[in-house]
Length: 107
Image (cartoon, rainbow, N blue to C red):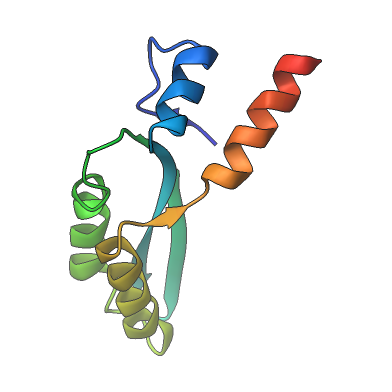
């Protein structure tokens, strides 16, 4: 998966930001086409300390709200799940990203 928001930052700078409260977040979106419903994760987003984790997910929330409802039966269910997760600031995956980055540096 691609990580957005770390362009131009060194590994040391990223780790320093994480120590200060930065996190890596995935948002969720839902798209439905009559009987088919797709629930997918976004790319990983780097959220800096003090930055709102909800704001970067608004596009995924809007996409789900407009395109997610139409599949029966899972469209409404996945749409509500996506909107709920994004309104809480997405899913924090920092614990999965930071240790793997540290392992790749050691190799």
